[in-house]
Length: 259
Image (tube, rainbow, N blue to C red; front, top):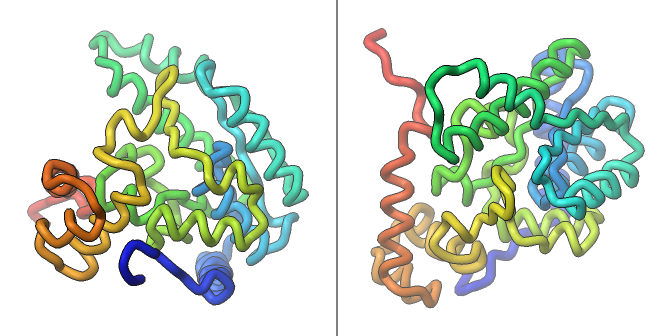
C-alpha cells in the first residue's frame, strides 16, 4: 500500500484466505460454514470465499431482514446467493427482536434497541450452525474492527473471520475479483439497524479516506498530522478516529477478569 492506493494481490489473497477457511473448518471437524448475507460487500466477499473454499453444498447463506431493511439490499442478497447456488434460508428478525425487547422492563434508547437486532441475527446464525455442525463465518473487516464499528455480542461474534485482516477498500477489490457484482462491491456501507441508517451517520469520513488514516495510524505508526495529510482530511477526522478506537478497546480485547 502506497500513497492513497490500497492495492492488494487479489488472486493471492483469495487463495490464501480460501486455504485459511479450509484449515479452520478441518481443524474444528465441522461440516461447513454458515454466513449471514446482508446484500453488502463484506458478507458477499465472505460468502464467495466460503463457497470457493468448501463448495456450494457446504455453505448455508442466511438472509435475516428486518422491517426496515431496504428492498434493494434483500434483492442484492438473493442475487448473490443465487449465483453461488448455495442453500439459502430467510428468517425475518423484527418480530423476534420486538418480543425480546418487549420482555425487558427497562426501555432502551435507539442504539440499545438496534443492537438487539444484531444480537438476534447472531443467535439465529449459531442456531443453524449448531444444528448442522457448521461454523459461523464472521463478516467484519479491519476498518470496522479498528473503529469499534460493530455490535459486541452481535456481528462481533463468530467462529472465524476471513476478512478481518483487510480494510474495507481492500475487501471491495477482493470482492470484485471474486465476481461479486459491481453494485454490491461498491455499495456504500449501511448497517441498517434503524430506518435509513447509514455508516456515514456514525463514522467521520468515507472509507476511502478512513482507511488511509487507519493504515497510517495503526500499521505505519505515523503521527496524526501525517495521517491527516496523507488522507487529505482535517485533523478533526483523525482525532475522531483515535477517540473511536480508544473508546471501543473493550470490544477488541478479551473480557477482563481476575483469573
